[in-house]
Length: 327
Image (cartoon, rainbow, N blue to C red; front, side):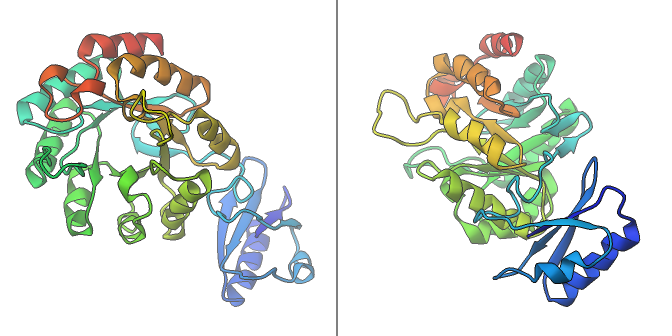
């Protein structure tokens, strides 16, 4: 439920309504807007008596949120959420944020070379996998804790914020210490124990859509994070599995565009995992931005032919330069 206050409602009037809601054993959250303040109410299984609330001074109207996903919906919050990672790096602020880097961290020298080059070409953040959830147990699984330490060192030397994917609650403390943003991968989108414990860290989270998940399931996964009191969520459309086998996945631009209407959370696209082919990354990246994406996450490697992970979908420095120029 959303209680919309009048434009001239005082802070005291707003607080009176908040106090009244909390007396009903419900949760009330102030949502300041450009024109007026709203109060989001959660925890109610049924409708709250409207007449009682409308009697309070300063209340303009009450809106019942009809979506299953409450906190992430436009009904609950009309204004776009802005997620700030570092000075000048803000998801949802109108300027697309570009995250780039290798699928997996292979060495300090490799990551530093990539970080310096992508930053010079205009990237805002560095990505790199330390823990790799691979389909095959024989594939490279990542450098784990050592990889995170390398990433932290490179971040400080290249002056660029970093993001990496967490796969286990055992590593919460490490990720809290070493990265600026934590990625929940597609395989863990509905790992609600992991999601809630990562949310409790308070760090910004990049939530990737599951490869076979509907939009509603995607947004409900994000709802778990916001319900934990962490509003700093960025969604990521990374491609879904369909009957088509010509590419790795299908980049679902329908859902990306629809989420911009349905939710106030920023959403970015991952054209690398969508296509699985480096030669499709640039056109898919441009299409995503045209559809309203708040940014991109792309794989860039200093030598894709020798990459230990996902070399076929990684851009080299020349291709990444072309992408940034075209964006």
